[in-house]
Amino acid sequence: MKSIQVMTKDGAYDVNVDSELRFRLHELLPKSYRKVFVITDSTVGPLYLDDVLTELRKVSEVDYSIVPAGEGSKSSRFYFNLMTEIINAGLDRDSLIVALGGGMIGDLAGFVASTYMRGIDFIQMPTTILAHDSSVGGKVAINHPEGKNLIGSFYQPKAVLYDVDTLHTLPLREIRSGYAEIVKHSLIHPTPFWDQLKSLNLNQPLDNERLVSDLINGIHVKREIVQQDEFEQNVRQYLNFGHTLGHAIEAERGYGHITHGEAVAIGMLFALRVSEQHFNIQLPFDELYRWFKQNNYPFDVSDLSVTRLITRMKKDKKAKNSAIQMVLLKQLGECTSVRLEDNDVTLWLETFMRELVNN
Ligand SMILES: NC(=O)c1ccc[n+]([C@@H]2O[C@H](COP(=O)([O-])OP(=O)(O)OC[C@H]3O[C@@H](n4cnc5c(N)ncnc54)[C@H](O)[C@@H]3O)[C@@H](O)[C@H]2O)c1
Ligand SMILES: O=C(O)C(=O)C[C@@H](O)[C@H](O)[C@H](O)COP(=O)(O)O
Ligand SMILES: [Zn+2]
Image (cartoon, rainbow, N blue to C red; front, top):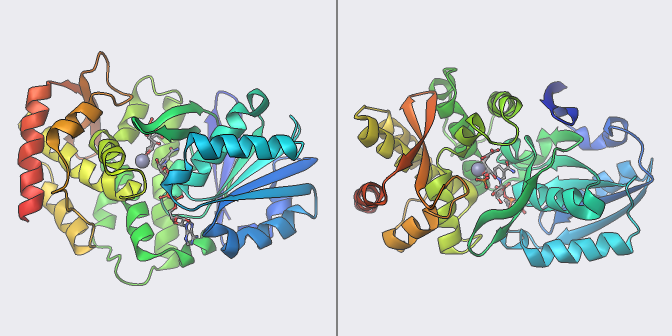
């Protein structure tokens, strides 16, 4: 088992990555809990919930809830419903919430845990590739129609138990989506990690060893940045590379109409273009664009309005005084956060969207 420790203000926790972890769950709980409540979604539930419940019942009283799969459940409605369910289930401050699923479940269940009785313990059991990012670092949230993750907190899990066998039931679209965040980690960190990734063909069956190594590389980058700046006062912004436009597209399309990774992929390309223009430098835009295209990332942006996207980008959490703030690259592996003029971003976005539509 690969175990990566994350140090935070409230102590350390382990990110355990291995095959068949869900069958060793009861040994891996950080402590014993009287009651455990599992939150999962309607796709993951039928696949893995029974295994998890069987393990947990060896040591605790267990209850669960299944929300509809998809980004639409990361909402105030499902947040409130879950609150009612855990109140009725009698969870108290000695109880544990288990988030079994991808980033949607991790963010939603984590936000429930962070606010129920002002915070009870939770653990992450990620089941998507993307969740190598979302399960580590303690950002938990729900969406608002006005913007992604606008209602949330920083609340670290007590453990992350990543059973990589669960990743083999992921559809290709979710494999692609998850790899977008691995690509992000490779571009923002000085290790030559992008060089290893760029030969990868996602249309071929996943090689388990390769996948685990890519996930672990991503987790290392995430951990390093979170440990330096848990509450996003400075360098943690770099983890938002590609997200200023990415989040704007997700909200603009309506949550769930584009995956998070697909939106971030477009956002990263745009951030590379802006970096090139702003610093008058050359970056591997073409190489990244080719890799995304070869791997069939969808880049149809013809339905999106530049003006509306700019309005959304001005409401991004990084913005100060409604000025657009983007994470740019000074060179591969070196980030900086830059305040930009609306007019410049508008012009660059118009050109960039034309480029995507015409290619
Ligand atoms: N907190 C953070 O730091 C952070 C980081 C990145 C992304 N996020 C958030 O994470 C969310 C996206 O996460 P995601 O891409 O994992 O989405 P998701 O949780 O919605 O999962 C994607 C789809 O895959 C299905 N699925 C999950 N595991 C499966 C499995 N093993 N087999 C088959 N199907 C499976 C789900 O039911 C869903 O339909 C977004 O809300 C994003 O904002 C948060
Ligand atoms: O952990 C972080 O910090 C990130 O920014 C990781 C992102 O991949 C993730 O999508 C996160 O949820 C975005 O956070 P937000 O604060 O921009 O909503
Ligand atoms: Zn993200």
